[in-house]
Image 1: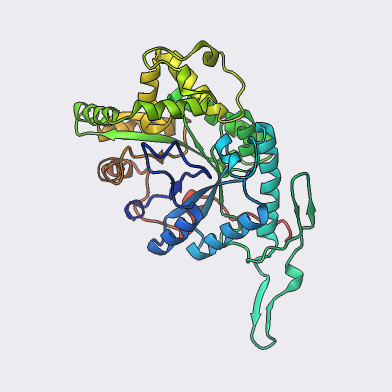
Image 2: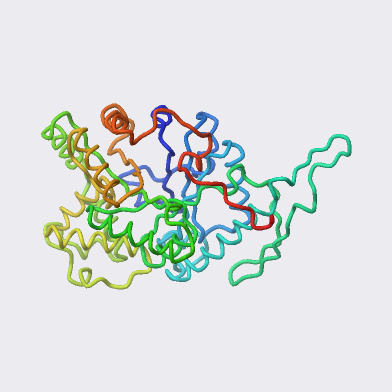
Length: 398
C-alpha cells in the first residue's frame, strides 16, 4: 500500500522452493507468492504484482492457469519472474538427486514459455459471446487446441481459463548468464539484474539490447531494471552511520553459508580475514548461479576484499548496487544511470522495511518528480500500461 500510494509500477517478490539456510538466522521460509499476490490484489487497486515462479519445478498447464487466474483476479496486474532454480537443495524437494544442468534448465524453460504463451492465446479475446438468447457462452471456433509435443512437454490445451486481461502476464527474467541473457532476449519484457558499478550495468544494458535486436524484437520492448539498495541520510555522515548500523547486525556464519552455496562448496574452505581461495578465483564451472558468482569474484578482485568484507558488501543487497548518501545524491545517481544508458528504471531494494521504503518515497521521489522523471498519478490500470508495454498479439488470431 505504501508503494502504491507513491505510484510505483510494481511489487516484486523473490521466491524459491526450498528452505533458505537452516532457519537459525532468518525466518525459515515464505508464503507461496502467487497465493500471497492474490490476497494483495484485493488490498490494492493499481500497483503491479510480480511473483517469482520456477519453470524447472512446475508444468506449463498448471502454472499458465494459476498466472492467468491472478491476472483476472487482479484486473490485469500480474507479472511472472521466470527463474530456472539454481540450487541443489531445491532439486531434492522434487525427487531429483541433483538439479538439471544449466543449459538443460534453460532449454526446458524456453519450451515452457512457448507452451504457456500458446495456452494463454488458446482463448481468443472475442471467444466469449455470452448470448443469453441462445444460451451460448463461447464460440468454440475461437478456442484452440495446442496438441504440443516437444522434448519436455506434451500438452493438448486449450486452457480452461479465458485469455488474461493483459494477454500474457508481464514476463520478467532475472538470470544474467549467457544462457539467461539469450533467454531474456527471446522472451523477457523486463529484466531484473544486479550490478555493483555503472560500467558493468552499462555493458549489460548494451549487450541485452543487442541480443534482443538480434532475436528480431524491438530493444525498447525490454525494460532493464537493476537493483539499488539506498542508505539515505540527511547528510553523508548520517547515511554512512545508518549503513554501519546495518553492517554491525550481520551474522558472519549465515553469510559464509550463503557464499558457500553460490560457489557450490563448503563454508569451511573460507577464512573470514583472507581473500577468496585460489580455486574460486580460477572460476570453476558451476551449474548454479553463474552470473552471481562472476559478480562476487569481480567485486572481490577489484576492491581486494577479504571474505569478511565480501559478506559485508553482499549482506544488504545480495550483490546489487548499494549507495550511501543524501536524497540528492541518490537521485543524481539514479538519473546518471538512466540517462547514461545503464538502466530503464530501478528495482528499489530498501535495506529495511517499511522505513527504508518510506525514506525513499519521502525524500528521493520528490526530486525525481521535480525533474519530470516519475509519475504523479497512475495513467493506466494494468501492469503493462505502467511499464509502457502493449498487449501481445494472439498467435491464433489473424
